[in-house]
Image (cartoon, rainbow, N blue to C red):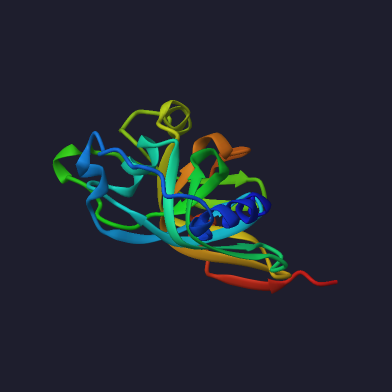
Length: 204
């Protein structure tokens, strides 16, 4: 993905080379409102950090509601540290992203239903993910996620991957996982989820 970000960089930071397009008035002005919130995500080969505008509600709703997300002040860094790309503004397809850190408000309490939390582990490319899945009482969480929207929240989560020659495991709170990018998902025991942060050298 980061190579594609490099191609988008030239389009994003050099608008003076082309005439400014006429921008029609938005059909839904409310989409342009709302604060800019931190955006941290993981793709196949890099981490992304920047800002995204959150009009209303939860970040999960925004991520599920659009096939492409508009980010500003973005930095993309490859997992091996060999590539670093900075972009003022860029549109990122949802299918390119594996995991997003959840930020912003938690949503309306009245819209929530009573659920149980089920510990699970996931493998998504080079990312190892641990956390909890929400499921209503009596429902199989693995069936629930298969039928859920594409971006699925996972509280009390940690992410493990190779970064700059080190194996890192970081507890990151609630994350939102792209269900379509999960390679393997399995039930886990509580002790498999409640693991401390870890940094180990992977150099031989």
